[in-house]
Image (cartoon, rainbow, N blue to C red; front, side, top):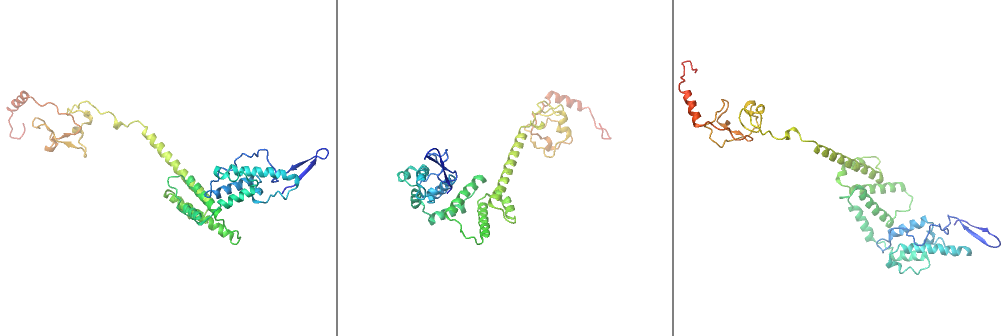
Length: 342
C-alpha cells in the first residue's frame, strides 16, 4: 500500500494526505451512483461476463483489494479506518448498481463489499460441463451467413473470451511458445471455417503463408478483400447507371413514314429500297394476301418473290379494266420478226 503522510496544521490538528496510488484514495469524480459496466448481473447465465467486467473496472479504480481481501480494515491505523469505510461503501454501491433489482434486494443490507462479492460468486459462479459444451459448439458452428465479416468476427471473439474465462489455459511455462502457437492456429482455423465461400481465394492465399499469420492479421486481410469487393461493386453500378443515362442511338430513331418512289411502299426511302439494293440474307418474307395477276414482277423475282416484306405497307393501286384494254390494243399490232426481236 502506498505511504500515507501526515502534515501538521497548527496545534495538535493534523491532516492526512493519501497518495493517488493508494487504494484508499478517492478521486473527486468518484460518486456512489455511477455504473462501472454495462453488463447487469441477472444470474448464472451472465455471471462470468459480469464478474470479469467488474474486476477490470475495479482494477482501473484501484479498488480491487476491497473485493479480493487484499485491502483489509484491520490492517490499517485507526485514523484511516474511516477512509476505508468510505471506500468500501463506494465499492458496495458500484456492485449494487450493476446487479438486477431481483438480486440486489438480498445484498442491499450488507456492510462489506468483499462478503457481497463472495456471496454472489458462490451462488452464480456455476461453471459446469453443459456451459462449456454450449460455448464449444457455438464456436464450431458459428458461420458468417448474411452478416459482414466484422460482425461475424466480433461475435466469434465474444465466444472465445467467455470460453477462455471458463477454461483458462495452464499456468505451466513448459513449451509455452508452442502452446501459444497452437492456440493461435486453432483460432485461425475456426475463423476460416465460418467464412462464406466468397472469400475462398483470400483464405487459400493466407493458408499458404509460412508461418501462418495470427487470427487478427488474417481478419485484417479478409477485411481488405471485402472492401475491394464493395468498391468494385460500386464501380460496376456507377458504370451501368452512366450507360443507361446515354441518349438513344440512331437505330432507335423514329421510323420513316413516307412512301418509296420506286416500289410505292411506305416505311423507307428510295435509297434504302431493298428492291434496288437487294434483300439481306436474313430478310423475312410473307405471302401476299391479294392476287398477283395484276402486278408487274421484275425478271429477278421468282414465284416465291411475290412475297412482300413484313414491314411493307399495302401495295399501290392496280390497273383499271379500261387501262388494261388500252395496253392490249397497243400490243396487238406488234409482230415477231424472224431474228427474234420486236
